[in-house]
Image (cartoon, rainbow, N blue to C red):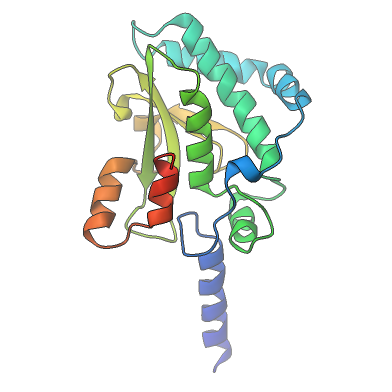
Length: 215
């Protein structure tokens, strides 16, 4: 085998380990089995992320006249606190691709993009918002190595495309949020549509569906 061939195979192996989508590896452990971080993390997030929480509150409130101001503030606050707590629970110490490799290798417990999306959405869903909806979306679903998942918040009854992306994965545990239509880095598709596309081709991982549906 030539040096070029070996380099190519090594690159493929790294891509597989760094994949964000379910790939057949363990893909991390259930969140319930990951130690919950200290309460002080929430206090630190509320202190250190005050400006970002205020900005996200304003952006959520601006999504429509029916959005309740208290709910927009609570959604922003819960999002930043949850990201801080999940960052600690996932043991994030590296950039996203390196962390993916560690999760897929069994070194770190959790922290693939779909872990972030599912766990963050679950915490927000637990708030029982009346004027907000939560969505799951997937980008690059026809390329397993580049597939990426995110949670999205929108006004009640609004399209996912009129919502705000809540993505802590892309910057290694630091929340990136922006309007879906302004997120030109990714072409987001509703998760249900992606599941239908994959199901028709026999590509849908059963375990992923169970986790996504809370089973």
